[in-house]
Image (cartoon, rainbow, N blue to C red; front, side, top):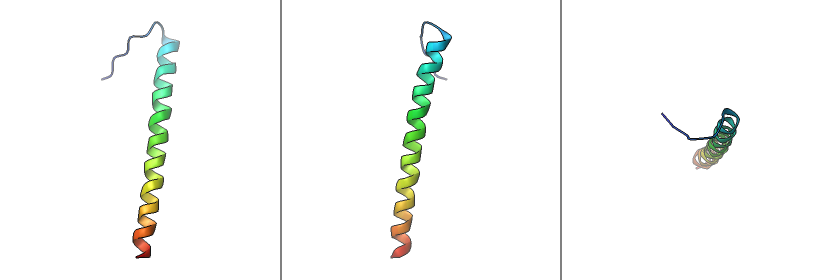
Length: 44
């Protein structure tokens, strides 16, 4: 469980939204890297 101390719900949603966007970006990057490695592996 994550506890954040923020002044209101709107701020909390903003903070969580930013964190989720970052996680999604990192996930997309990892998927892209994995696909590239798989392609290189299949070509060998």
